[in-house]
Image (cartoon, rainbow, N blue to C red; front, side, top):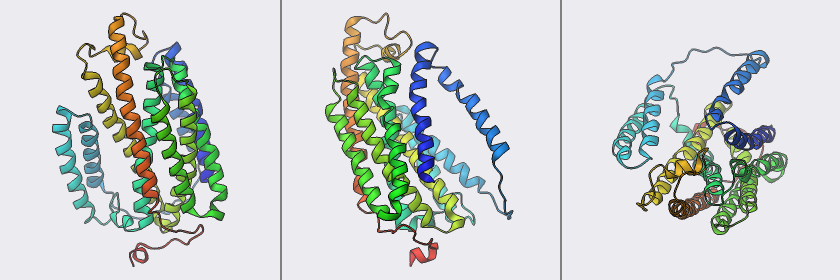
Length: 355
């Protein structure tokens, strides 16, 4: 079923970048956000009508303080990742909030994030790998289209099409992973998948150059998606089968949460790297990149400014792609620590795992 879920996500991801390119080209980038409104309403209506479940009601104490501290800490961390003055304010606030969060969570009876789960090697490694996987994936989705449009001179539709193969390779590999998992176990799929993604990221950094064909990022993103599809299904199921039934919800959510935060932080930090590359050339106006990538496609910018902007973008994005390759390589290295966990292993308690 996880393979099926991955395939559904992949189909939606296939439509999304293409539709986004069409919207930006023929309407305005503002409509990229408005399109979430009917989709969200339709999803809520579908759940309201079709989801039927038997809920076992128990008395719980909601961890409002823990959730608030975590929200404050991560928001400040994202703010501080922008660098400059934002870092001077955001990073100390993030450190203080997250330290308080850890201290409080160790004492509360029902923490929003139970740290004792991470005593299990499977969950700890899956979380670390998931953080790096999210960082690599979201960074690829963000910066490959930017390169295609800003350096290769492609249209918004071509920029979206550059990453479309990723969401073709992902669902196919995800479905295959779910099928072969009972025969291979978790570790071979995790290691193989993350190694494939690392190879794809390194190939992208090596071969994506000015004048390159758009097929270069397409091939790299397809291979990257295949690797993620193989590894992510195995990682998620490994986490779910390594905890008790009552812990599966929080264990799954923790893994997905780490992936999302990893991706968000990476995009912010790499954006700072790119901004730094642009600011090194004083001949480039502050709004030049926005004008180049906006609806006017650089109309009104001096030819010399366009040339300098293209060179700075190419240099900055090349650095960004090598950093993405390093992130993917780190995820592959962490996968070497993934323990032997045969498929079908019975869930264990935290106490057993600690023993």
